[in-house]
Length: 496
Image (cartoon, rainbow, N blue to C red; front, top):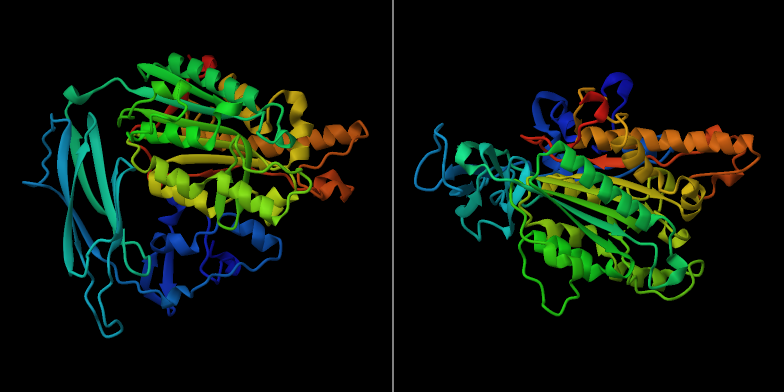
């Protein structure tokens, strides 16, 4: 990244959490005045940065990184009533204490650093958030939380942010759960598919088939893997895929009680997810990104006008009735599952629902990145134009679902890094990000040979040479930390 001046002078960055540990900020040309890049994730992480730079854009930031208050609150983590030991713990829950201390005032700052938004993780998955000011005007504070342990390693991590939204150093503690804590887990699969919207002009053709195929093939592969004692598929299709039902499904898994008047149906099977569980969320329907937020558009989209005539007022109504990344984050915040995976196969319909910059990727949203980072989950997103969805219809699936299910699960194609007969969640998602653009390029070449004209990015039909047309690449947003026990998606038959 440092060769030939190939860096972002504004301080913006993109990449995976693993790569961030290899990079430091340097201040005032001083080799020893440095800071980890992760400290400034909330303001300076910019998904799709390289694509924008190549397109001639100069992304800017609201604040100079050198003006940030880099003083960090001090965070410490301990067991209440005693220090952690190497001995295995046989109790299901333990109480932990987080001590937070303000960084004191200095010659450049009249007040302390402040400390807010404290987070506690178990094995990379979020356990608890204390929103807002943690110090309440004091120089120090202590927080306590009772958390469940799993058999084997339990790596606890806590951190906070200062008043300038700069992250503290991690506080870490390792505990070992006794073998007696082993429990059979459940794989929860929430499959949302929308062919039929309340406004029929937004209807799709293969979203329901995609959701059903995804869920059933995942059920088959997970049964074959044998890691989970129970695989529970909850389909939310068409009129059942309302905003209330989708959010209720997530809240039930997080242990929240829901109003008894809510239409339940398949939601009745949902109970609080445990640390040994996995939650896999699949959405096939309309979606859009506006600004730094993204939105999933449910059945009850709140607009009854024409698709082509959608104006600013209609768009505002759709967004108000949609599920934003903020609402998703709130719904999954208390979800205790050890593995979390979300796949969004979104279709845009009409220019007003396209992202501001189509080449950058309609779902390449900072909100998604923050959700993956702060909750400890993998998120795979793909978005295509309405026309592109129609062009891919001959497959009987959207391109993303075809790559994931027909090639990724039904063959051994996705098992390649390493090719060991075990398909991990990360391998599976990475395979789809590479395979979908290849499928788009192949389809454009095949269509040209038949005298047809296909473009996968809106407005590029006028570009004569198909090789100069852009493709829409899915994007994976990774968890901050690798799992202690990675989620195995399948064991391809060729290696069994």
